[in-house]
Length: 177
Image 1 (cartoon, rainbow, N blue to C red):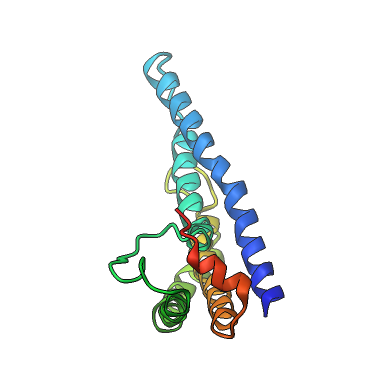
Image 2 (cartoon, one colour; image 1 turned 120 degrees about the vertical axis):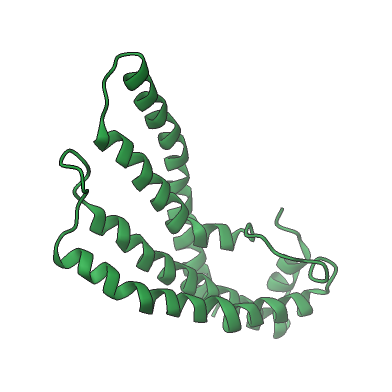
């Protein structure tokens, strides 16, 4: 169980670390677009669209990384002061009852939308835009899969903690942020 959870965590951590560089790239490209447009009078739809693509990829594909780091908003009135076993139960319940079902729903609803986009190799509405809208839409499916997998890792770690695994119990004692 731990090996599977470690693999999922490692995958999402690697993806998240790589994608975090997109934040810097977004700032640099946006600066370049503004500079080119307002200083030199040169506009680029492709560059403007690339910012939207990067922003979408960053948020959709780094969501599981954020979940792994316990960085999503949590109403933790009771959770914060709970003992590790209670936290494990809450984490497992949240993943089983909310996270994974919502990810399945997102995948189920988005799949025809993404498949249609791929069938026509959908691109930008602008002639000089990025002709890869289908890739951007595929991030929805990747989001659902990566979040569901991170949910599986949460469930596995919760099972280990409830079984008395000291490493997992200790991890639940230590606040992430």
